Structure formats: C-alpha cells, structure tokens
Amino acid sequence: MLDNLRSFISAAARNRETRLPPRVLRAIRTQQDTSEVLIGWIQLGVVSVFAVLYTLAPKTFSADVEFAPVPWVLSAYFLFTVMRLVLAHNRSMPDWLLYLSVVVDIALLFGLIWTFHVQYDQPPSFYLKAPTLLYVFIFISLRALRFEARFVAIAGIVAALGWLLMVWYVVQSNDRGDMVTRDYIEYMTSNSVLLGAEFDKVISILMVTTILAIALYRARGLLVQSVVESAAARDLSRFVPDQIARQVKTSDHVMTAGEGEVRETTVLFADVEGFTTISENMSPSELITALNEFWTAVVEPIERFGGVVNQFQGDAILASFNLPQADAAHAAKAVSAAISIQQVLRDRTFGAGLSLHSRIGINTGVVVGGLVGTMDRLSYTVLGDDVNLAARLEQLNKEYGTQILLSENTYRLAGPARFPFRKIGDVQVRGRKANTTIYTVDIDADSGV
Image (cartoon, rainbow, N blue to C red; front, side, top):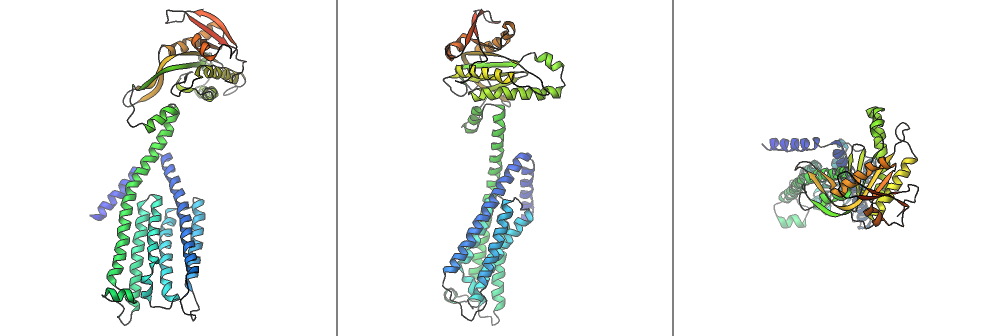
C-alpha cells in the first residue's frame, strides 16, 4: 500500500510538472542550478569549519600513531567539494551526479567519524560518541535548497543506513561480546554501546528526513505556482500596460470587467498612411514584418514620453497619456511623442526598404480607462467621446494634408508657446454637432519637453 501511495505521489508530481510550458520548466531549472551553487558553497564552508576545528583541537592521540587519517579525509572531502562547486557553476550536474554527491557527502562524513577511533587509538565504539554526527542534519537540510523532496529522502536514507552500518561494525568488532550494555550510566561513562541510543539516532534522522521531505513536497507546489504566476505576469505585461499588470499582481481581489478610472487624459491615435494600397502590393509575411518594425519605431517615442499603448487595431495604434499612470504634463508629452514619431519615420525604412508614413490625431478630455470583456477574457482600453475625437482628427489629416492634428484642449494644455502650432480652423467633425477647433504642429520642432 505504501509503495502504491509513493508511486502515485511521484507520478502526480511528474505529471503536474510535465504539463508546464518549457519556459516555466527552464525557470525552475535555473532556480535549481542556482541552488546547487549555493549548496556547494555551504559544503565548502562546512569542510572549512571541520579543518579549523581539527587544527585548533588538542591532539590527544598517541605519539606512536604514524598515520593520522583525519587530514586525509578532510582533504578528500575538500577536493570533492571544489569539484562539485565547479560543476555546479558550469551547470553540469545531471541527476546521477546529484545522487552520487549525496552519497559521497554522507560517506565522507561517516568516514571522518570512523577515523576517530584509529587516530585516537580507541576501540571502534569510541566514534559512536562523536558529536560530529550532528553534521549529518546539515547535509540532509542542504538538499532542501533544491526544493526536491527526493534528494532530501535519499540523504536521510543513506545517513540512516550508514549509521546502522557504523553500529554494526562496532558490534562485529567486539570479539568478547562485552561492549554492548543496557546500563545508561555505563554507556555515558565508557566506550560501551547502548543499542537503544544508537537506534534513537537513526529514528531521529529518519523523522527529520520525513518531515522535511513532506514540507518540501508541499513547498515545491508553491514554487511551481510562483514561477507560473511570475511568468504569466511577465507575459501579461506584453498584452496590457505595465501598470495594469502590476495591479493584477498586487490586487487583493480578482480584477473583473468594468473596473476603471475616470481621468483627464490625452489620447494619441495613429495609423499607417495608405495602408490598403501598401498591403495590396505585399505578401502577408512581408506585410507583417514591415508592420511590426513600424510599430516598434512608433511605440518607442510614445513610451519614452510616458505614454501607454492601449491597443493595436490593425494598422492603427491607440495610446494614452496620464492614464493609467498620472502625469501632469500629459498633453505636452503627447505632442512631443507625435513629433518624435514623425521624425523617426522620415529618416528610416521598414521591411525590404519600404517607406511608411503615419497620420496622428491627438485630443485631451475626460475618458475612462479600465478592463473590458467577459469573465474569462479581459483587455485594457480607454473609452469615451474624447477618444473617438482623437480617431476623427487622425482621419482629418488626409483632408488637410497634415501629419499631426490636435484639438484645442490639447493645444491649450500643451502650451501654445512651447511648440510651433498652426491653427487650421473650426471644422465639423463627423459625429459631433459643435464645431471643433483644430491645430497642427511643425514636425521639425524640438520634441523635448
């Protein structure tokens, strides 16, 4: 039954993680590789502590002892630790080497403990009293840094079996059979062996291992969930503004459609001039390549001046300033971004040497920015009549032969003396009853704010 349960848990863990995207698995692997480096440095610290303690401790063994094994064991352990650390830094540690590393760690520690009776010329039971055994819990807990219960379990099982082997060696070495005792006082004041005390050590090792492995198994789920959510948040920031992605990550409730904020905002609407004609003369792959290069060039000035891209609508782009991120100079920065966009487009080509131009409309007014959609699918956008006006102004560029048109609200807030504006006049914008005063701006002007 226990074997079936263990198999079920192992299979569930494997299935849970094999369903993860490769990028998430790579992120988890990176965390584990970093942990292996940390484990290596801690091991190096442990062997250094061993060496210092051995150096400072008084040497009570007989002068007749020609061979002192402790320095040799410490040297072997030091070389193994350095080799392991180098491999960890090089990301060259397959699973079999990780398992071997666990076994070698425990073996070298117990080998060091075993040498005590040789170096100090005492019966084998002498080493069973060594407090150095406590270091085994360090080696078991070290494996928790990798967030994989299997390595903790292997370390604990090897340690328990290793100590049983050490006890067996003591018992087998006692030819006269008088080394084992049931008297606790005799056990504490002599080299006698109390088997119950040794079994207590083994039980402690196994209990600590079990508790730590269970905790790690549960923590592993949290690690995977954390990596998945972190990756999702990074991906989310590519589809919605960074500020909205941060709100989603830090919100104390699940964000739903309809959540929004009303604020005075400068809206910039831009599209590709003559896009229909251009698309007729290009293959789909050539078109998408050129268009993506175009948007990359357009988005950079928008973001540089503090704007947020809300939507890509075919060949058009919608951006907002002062929403969702507050910016008192939003109107001036939107005008600066528009000038910079036109200057960038004038000086470069896209795709296979294609020249692309843009018409831009800018308007400032009170709009609402928020999440729209359904319970299962949401997107962020800005809505309102003033958003529509920016789109209408973009279209009017064609009628007036301009590249940038802006409303009187934007003109007033941006600062009439700050840019070389030119008044176009009062026009009837489609869909609006009242006339709208519109302006253009010289694209050769300084775009700085």
